[in-house]
Length: 242
Image (cartoon, rainbow, N blue to C red; front, side, top):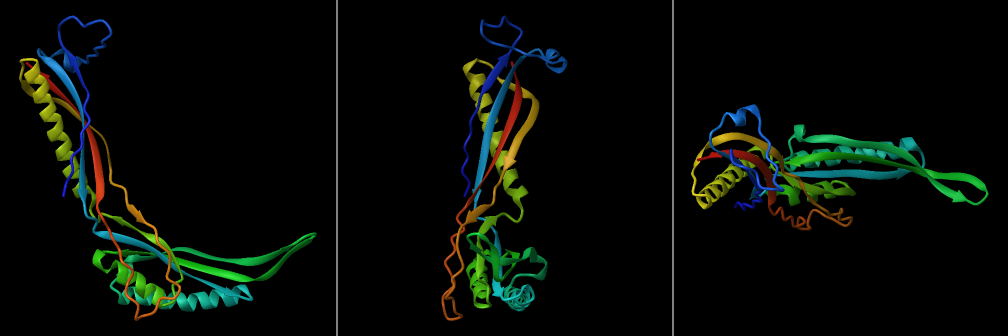
């Protein structure tokens, strides 16, 4: 499904007198033209279902020593990454994003902090290319010992394809408006003089959630709703009217 939105502004530069309050600028290329120049700014958007989910999952463990906390964390993290692969996540799509070990301190008035233990954290970023398996992958990670899930974001594996759809829609909207202005002026569109792109935007869509601490293999996977992502592009097109 696609949704087109457009905002346009126009400026006419001709070889006639410029009304008071209007500003006309010409370049050497424009001065060689014999018609009227119409500049149109248009925006196009495309809305489509994402086909890539990115998870941030990991394990947090505690121990009396830094080594004990890290060893337990490593053991559980190995089980988590194996579970991700069994759930269909390719090894190339699993990447470590954070490893940390730090002391847990108890603060006392008038005395230095007392170290009561250590906490270890290890987090990976996992790409789920079969978006229908997102809930099952999350469930597998939690069942394998993952207790730190920092949400999921949705995006397009090939964002350029969606940008191209928005670009075509933006150009079509610019052309439609140019024809409208030309008709209102009893003129016609002769050709396109210049085209520039103002920028494209296709952001990932975050989906906040937290780990189910009581998850079990028998529990159903968490429901995931990817929705649709809007991709936006703006263009500036200069037409010659006669």
